[in-house]
Image 1 (tube, rainbow, N blue to C red):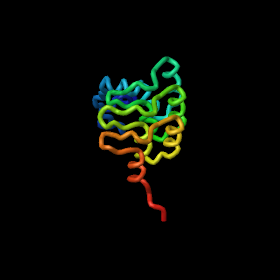
Image 2: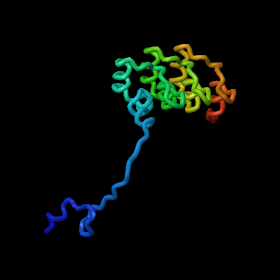
Image 3: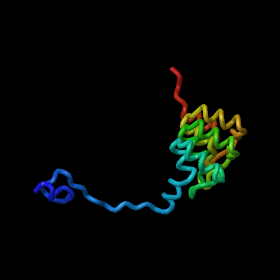
Image 4: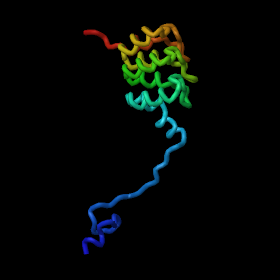
Length: 147
């Protein structure tokens, strides 16, 4: 009798009840997950390398105008940032709306090693975002006072 209910997850005598709900994902979300941006955001170096070797540009933008370097800089992924820069990523690329650069994104999150890496690769410290802020502004806003 017990075998009769092994695969019936909706039977009241079973301890396992699952509710199946629809899962949907937009094409844009799938494009992001399959793209270089997802690899950069989640520190997936093997995936990043595979995409770069297939000819994906390190400067390709997602729908919001962010590049892989924006995502990696924001997340603090040094090795990903370095690889992107070594493969020719533009350190001064700006997003469409906010006009932020990877340097702005790193400064917003106090990723000092990324800031140094970007400036070593020629990133311009004086570029202003849409609000008129430079990297220095973000560093001042986010700094923690020394006691």
